Length: 181
Image (cartoon, rainbow, N blue to C red):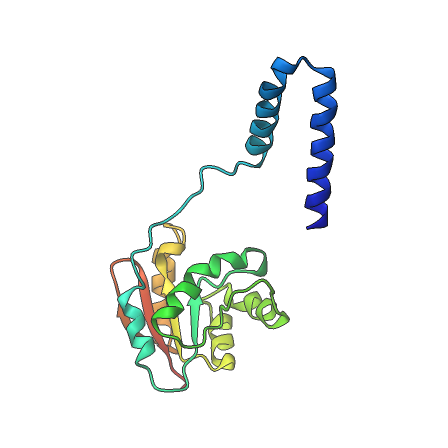
């Protein structure tokens, strides 16, 4: 806050200095150009948004699951792009169960360690991590994988013995039950 206050005060001094050195009729134009320049410098447009159409109905199966339940969503993003978990956190409001993809301003060491293997889902090492976590459900977002990756992901999921498909929708959401054999 003090930093921003100092910038505002210095900007005021700069405008006062300009007022003494520039013809009075040009001052409003000069100030307008300065404000436009500062605004343009900070502009981050276009802001890419996606309309919220509600939590996918497939999440009701997680809400109805017996306790304890732990959901892990895939792709499981590495710490440097943890913000990609925002959709998962929003969808958690449809079931209110714990998720391993928790998102906040802090990236705990446990998340960093999990992401080292869970990023490679549906490889066996990622499924082994799922089992070690005690996960009961896995939600796969096929729409978040590259189009060229989806067929391979689906094939690998079909061959995975520790995952049982519970539900799928046309938007690419696939909910699996994690089974221990």
